[in-house]
Length: 185
Image (tube, rainbow, N blue to C red; front, top):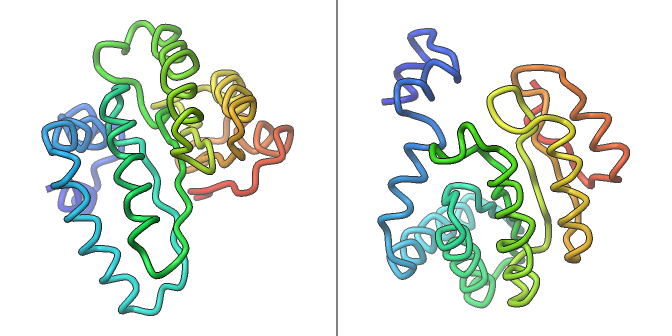
C-alpha cells in the first residue's frame, strides 16, 4: 500500500500521517512472536544468499518498545548462529518516535539510553548503533546523544541522515567517526 502511495507522489511524511511507515511496521512486528520473526527472516536470508550475498547487516528499529527491539535483536543473534554467511546487527531503536512519545522525545531517548542499551550490551545483541537523523525523526543533537551513549555500550556508530533534509547529520556522523552514513538522497 505504501509503495503505491509513493508512486502516486505522496511524501514520506504524508504516508506516516496516514498511518503508514515505521509506526505501521512496528505495530505489525510487535504482534509477531520471536519464532515467527526468525522463520520469516531465515527465509529472506536464504533468498539473499541465493542471489549472491556474502555478508549482511540486519537492523532493528521496527519494534520501538524495549521488548520489541530486544526481540528483534535476539532474532538477529539466532540468525547469526544459524547463518552460513557473516551477519552484523545494528540497533536502530532511534528510528522513529513511538506515538506515546510524540510529545515527549526526552522520555523515549532516556528509555533507549537507560533500558535498551544496557540490555543490548549485557546480552551482546548488536555490533552497531544507528539513528535516523531527520525532521520526521531525531534531531542532530538527539542523534549525537544517542550515538555517544551507544559507543559507551561498545557499539560502533552508523547514521541514517539526509534522506529528506540536510540538518546536521553529516557533521554528527563525522564528529562521531561513524563507519557509515546511510540514506544520503
